[in-house]
Image (tube, rainbow, N blue to C red; front, side, top):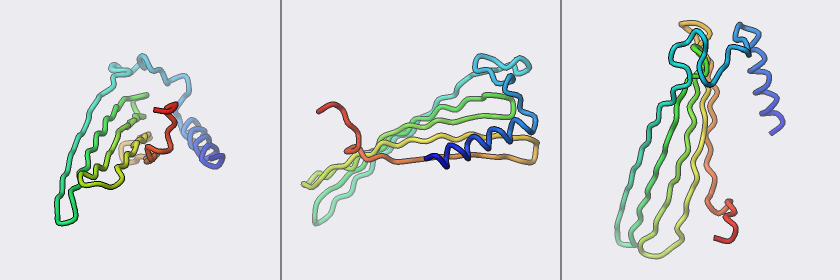
Length: 131
């Protein structure tokens, strides 16, 4: 975890050294950037079902995302979702929390630096206070 934070700090330091000024970031509107913070929302849902000699199984997944611009050359996307495997003929049902983010920086027309993280957390790892 410490290594990840250190790498992230180095990436941000390098990006500022190449012309992105910290004072240029403003979540409510970049002075020379007309649209400012204008998030775009999207979502995706799917369901699958299979049945055979040994039983039936289904899986449902929902994933929502929010994309927004932090600077004319920097944009970000945040994703959050849930996936559930259902055993209709007995067996253990499992759920998964889905999440991630992506940060894109375009220092020039022909180059793109992107940092992406996506992860899955089993539902059993969450503590809902006894629920």
